[in-house]
Picture (cartoon, rainbow, N blue to C red):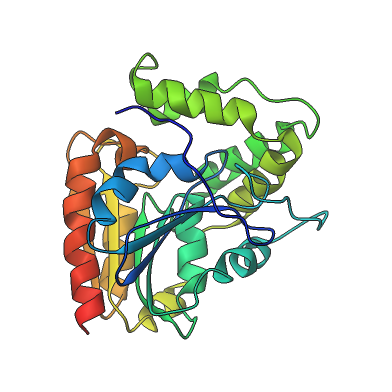
Length: 259
């Protein structure tokens, strides 16, 4: 697949790609990426749904948050502007954290979390916070370490696209978002128990950070939760395993919009 830049709408501070007609689906990407990370999902889902893929604040063409030290709710508030009708919210990585926070919005009817973290070990939590502290807010960081965590082969079109996006994002915006991602430890157990609408958790069997056990635990805590583990997949499975991801998402969206 060719990861080309897609035309956007930007009525205010948030830019987004929107395609299709029908029930609404909102896609939220992770730190350092942009709406194009969902290109395969936009192409597939928009045949039956109105799909909105946003750029997080400070990413793509969205305005950066003016808050010096934002928290997760600041990102959620920015994204929630786009939830104006019954919506299935789908998030990846940090986008999954935001999707969880959107769950209480009156128009959200289902949440799908892809490669979501939950209750990191103290060692893992310390490692990600240490990475956040080393980031510069004036110079882009070498993306090699990040890409090596995401991909086994850095020569693939998916890895090269992510390298381009990581190089284009503002260092200041990236550090703000990554610092929030590092500080969070996933949704609370009580919050998951209170999530009454359908919840889907998908991760890769080869994902070392947002592990299969995390997804299974979150799904078991939700009254209407389901976990799916994709064999051979890792962190960037929406790009590397797009057809499998799309098949599961379509089934989930159909279920959520029928309720």
